[in-house]
Length: 217
Length: 304
Image 1: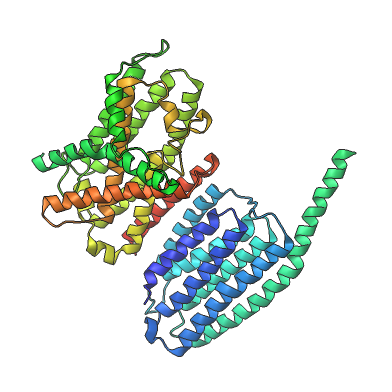
Image 2: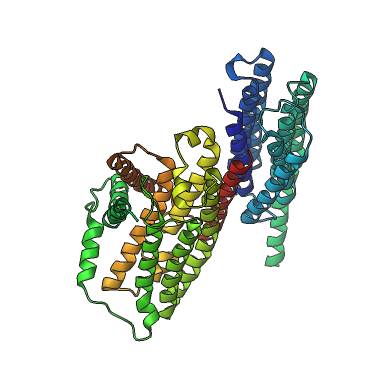
C-alpha cells in the first residue's frame, strides 16, 4: 500500500522542515504530519491492507493521538496563550539546517555500525529513527519558547516509536509499551502546557511592561 | 559531433526566447489579462540588435567583453548538454564539472562588467548575485553527482541517459529529491521568484537585472539571449530527468523534450503568480535547503 522507503524519506524531509520553519503554527502542522507518516509506516511494515488487526489498531491509535489530538491541544494552547507566532531561535534557521545535515550524516554512519535484528524492512529505518531523535533534542535546546520544547519532546518520542518499529514484529510487548508511553506523553504534555507555557508567556509580558516603565522614568 | 546534436543546439538557439513568452502568458492568464504576444522576446531582441550601444566614459574593455564572454560561455555549456536522447556536441568523462564552471565563468564575466561601470547599485547587485550563486552551485553539483552515482558514469550523456522509467520505479524518492533541488537551482540561477523578481523596477530589490542596467543595444540583446539560453540549459537538465522519453524516433524525443520545457516554463509562471518572492535574508536558507535535498538524494542513491 505505502512503500516504507518513501515514507522514511518523507520523515527525513519533515525533520528538515521542522529545523527550517519559523512559524509555530507550521511547526505544529509538521509534527502532526510526522505522526501521520509514522502511522502509515507501521502499516507499511506489515504488508498493507492484509495487516493483522493489532497493526491496524496500533496505526490508527498513533495517527489519532499524534496527528489529531496533540496538534489540536497545542493549537488551542497557542491560541489561549495569545503569543507571537515566531519561533525565536537561539540558532539561526540556515545554521539549523546545516546542523541537521551533520546529524543526518552521523545517524547514517551509526546506522551502518549498529547490529540489527534480522528482517528490518528498510536499512533506512534505524538512521531515520536516530536522526528524528537528534532533531527533537536539537529543537528542545535551540528554540526559546516552551511550546517548541513540547514539540521537540514529541519529535524525540516519534523517533523512539520509529526505533521500536524495528522490533515490532518480534516483540509485541514493546509495541504495547510504546502505546503506553504515548498515553503518558499526552498527560505529560497537558501538564506542561497548562503550567509551564502560561507561566512562561505571562513572564515575558511582565518583563516587557517593566522595561517600558524603566525607559519612561 | 553529430548532425543530430547540432540540430538540437540550433533548436535551442531558436526556441529559448519562447520560454519567456510562455512564462509571461501564464502570468497574464492568472492576472486575468491578455498579456504580451508569445514571441515578444524575439521582437525585443530584434529591436535591441538594430540599435546602437552607449558606453559610459568610466567603463573599459572589461565592460564591453562582459556580454560576449558570458554568452560564449553559456553557448559552450549548452554544447555539453545532451538534449532529447541524442549525444551532446561535446562529451567526455567529467564534463558536468565543466558545465557548472562554464556557467560560473558566464556569471563572472557579467559580475566584472557590472563592477566595471563603477555604479553603486550594480556593485550591490553583483554582490548578491555572487552570494546566491555560491550557494546554488553546490546544490547543482551535488544533484549532478547523485545522478552520476546512479549511472556509474561521469559524462553528462550517460548520466542523463541512465535516467529512465525503470530508475523512477526503483529510486523514486532519490530522483524526486534531486529534481526538487535542480528546480530550486533553476529558479535561482534564472533570477525568478521566489529568489529574484525579474519584473521589479526598484534597484534596491533587484539582483540580476541591476547588473545589466548600463548595457544597451546589441550588448543588452546578447545578455538577454544568454539568459534565455541559460534557462533552456538548466531547464533541459530538469526535463531530461522528469520526462525521460527514449522512443528512438528523434522527432518524438525532441517533441517531448520541447513540450517538457514549455510545461516547465508554464510551471514557473504558476509559481510566480501564486507566491511572493522571499525576503533577501531568507533566500540563503532556501538555497541551502536545495543543497540538502541534493545531498540527501546522493546519500539515498549511494547506499540505500
